[in-house]
Each structure stands twice: as structure tokens, then as C-alpha cells.
Image (cartoon, rainbow, N blue to C red; front, side):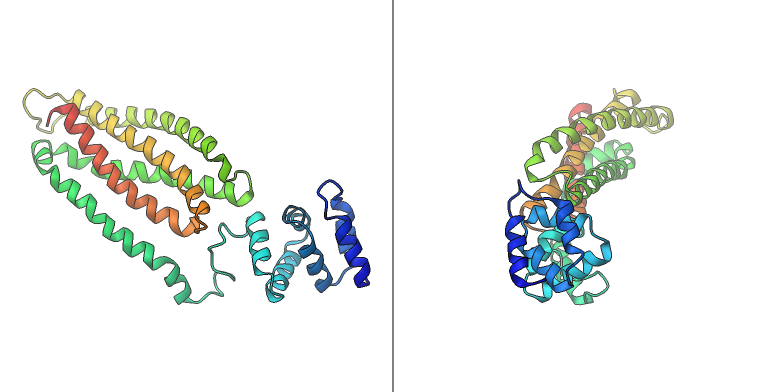
Amino acid sequence: MAAVDMAVFEQSVASETEFDLHQVLAFMRRLSLKEKTELIVGLTLNQATDVLSETPFREVNELLEQLEETGHEVRARQISMALGLISSEAEPAGDYLDNSVLSHVRERVGWIVGLALMGIVSGLIISKYEDAIGALVLLAVYMPVVAAAGGNTGSQAATLVVRALATGDITLTDWAKVLWKEFRISLLIAGVLALVIVGRVVLFSGGIPLPNGMDIYSVGLAIGLAISVQVVISTSLGGLLPLVARGFRLDPAVLVSPVLASVVDITGMLIYFFTVTRLLGL
């Protein structure tokens, strides 16, 4: 294919309104790898994504590698994000096994160390409520339940949103829709979980000594309400964090899980003890 023919064809498909996907795919079958790469560069990002979505995966990899080798790394990463091959432009180039151990460490260690130091806050919150735990030992029994409930629901929401971002189902502009949907989901999950926890406390914790004037039903309701609030906040946060990470061009796969775990631990303990102590007068 002559260079002038290539230029004419690229100009003819440059307009979104005139773009014919089937025509481009048929044209590409007659091109060499180098010529296909030049064509992809000449297309808009949306056009290139549409074309490569209908291209065999092996050929897509070859084209992306050719783009990087010819100095079009930005276009290669944009297409990779649009196709869901990577979740963020901040992700390291290359395959998982091809990247060195040190490159992975550099990408992860800063977040891990910083968030580990944040974990001290959880300890400070627990120490502040030592008297409440001493007065009602049952509070300590359900501390892991609060952390697990918040972490699990938040991780579920984050995983689904990361996948939706990767597949193009949602974009950053959909943050309000995501928040509203996850909030409604969290309310229903929180209601079911609260019923289970209240039943668990009432049926299986009746033998635990309680302070004077306190009954097991009020304790169960207080713990159930605290866990419900934590689930709503964690789920909503889990839905928003991937969008925040994408907005700052950070990798959601690396950032969301550790940040969510640390934030849920801190907010979980604070919400749990604040709610229970206020409702029970401890």
C-alpha cells in the first residue's frame, strides 16, 4: 500500500461521522504490521478502540508493542486503558512477570508504609474506650465483626467499580450515579446484616454479665446500628475510591485495597465505639 493511499484513507476516516468500522477492518487486513500501526496513530482514540475491539487479541498485543517501540507510548497506554487491559496510566509498562521485583516494590511500598503508620490511629481509638470495654466485655467480642463487615462490603463495591472502569461501563463523570447506587445497595445490606447481628447478640450472648440497668436487647440494637452505619460508609467509600484514584491517575488495583482497609479500620472503630457508648450511656 503506497504511503499516499495510507494518508488518503486516514484522512477519510478521521471524522467520527464518516467512520466506517467494517471498512477500516477490511482495509487493515491488507496492511503490514507497520502500516497498521501508522493507521492506528492516525485514528482518533475512540476509532482506534473500536477497531482493536474487533481485532484478535494476539494482533492487538503486537500493535501495542509496535506503538511503544515507535515512540507512541501515550497512545498505547490510552488504548490499553480503553480496552480494559490496564486500569490506570500509572500502572507500570509491560506484563506482570516482565516487570522486576524492585519496580513492583517501588510502586507499592510507599502506600503500605504510610498506611501501616495510620493503623496507629485505630489503637489510639481503642485505648480511648478502654473503660467502655471494661464495663461491657461484649463490645470487644464484636470489634472484629465491625472491621470485617466494613472491609468486605467496601471491597465488594471497589472491585465492581474497578471492573466497570476497566470495561468502560462508567467514567469519572458518573461518580454521582455510582455513589447513589452504592448508597442504596449499602442500606439494604446494612439492614440484613443488622438483623443477623441483633439476633446473634440476643440469642447467644445472654449469659454475659451486663452493667446494671442494661438489657441484652438494647446492647444488640446498639451493636447492630453501629455495624449498619459502618457498612453504609464503607460501601459508599469503596465505590468512590477507584474513581478518585483514576482521577489522580493512580492505579486503583494498587491503591484502593490498602487505603480502604486502613480507612475502614479507623472509621469502623470510631463509629462502633461512639455509637455504642452514646446509645448505652457507657
